[in-house]
Length: 366
Image (cartoon, rainbow, N blue to C red; front, side, top):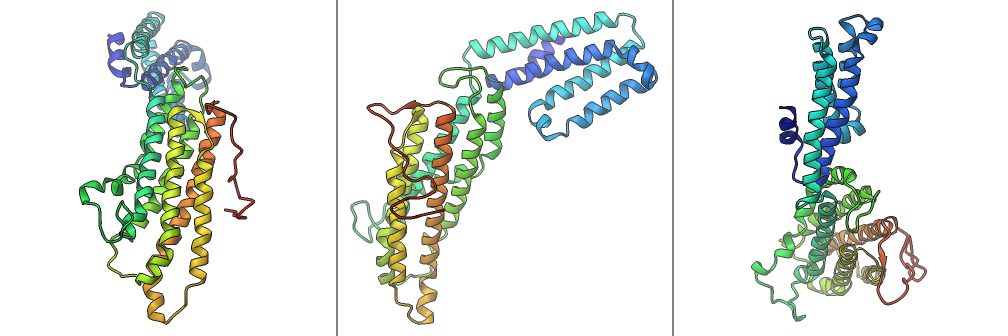
């Protein structure tokens, strides 16, 4: 009965989830059974009836420790149930050792079957799913940024003004939304991936927590983009002369940052240590300098004129924040490639990093 129950309860879709539940269940049962068997000796300290409740209560409060709840909550729950069963049975049944042995052996049998099947029969790796999810999120952000400039300034694909792409071909404008609500999924996959053995390109002690850091930064970038979307279909008309003045640097800022993210996603997908995105980040920062120059040369005009250009200036400011965020994503991705020992680029040595924390040419400091 316990073997069947174990298979039903611990068998999950991914390898990591199955291993997590199986190991938690087996270890918790072993520990709880041992303590249950020794309940008679501990009873001398707390009293015949008080000792089981004290240990069960201590285990219950242990579940609220954040680290334990995130990784071992199921095991603590099984410990409480098993200990309560064995210890209470000890006062009524003489065969407590047989009860503990049978429960542990059958649970180990069911858990072993689940682990073997999940690993060797069509395995689904939580770590691989996490890796692909983060890569896909970066690609979605890149798609939006590459197409934003032309959409905002009403520029067609061939460079002309005023000819817009049909709405059905503007799916990139919605691509960032899938990034906003991935926090829970990423944390769950990272927790399951921690339990998985080394497989494929993901070796033992792969830095799964680094994916969570990248996920935080991509969501931050997505929230900036969500704010930027408000300005695409804004009813406030910005003076055409001012729009033309900031069009080139803004479009370059958007497209270059999108290209940088696309290069990062490509490097992560192939698990290579690449620095080709540095050029695009440097180009985007030079475009920011050009934008500053354009704004400095703009005549202040009257109060009405200033009110008209505020939305466009705000959009440009958000683009600047996005570039800063993209650089942080690049830093974090590079840290991942070093910690995970990604392979070098084919065809030569690695290029030096030009952008980390500043540029000698532009003097930029985030």
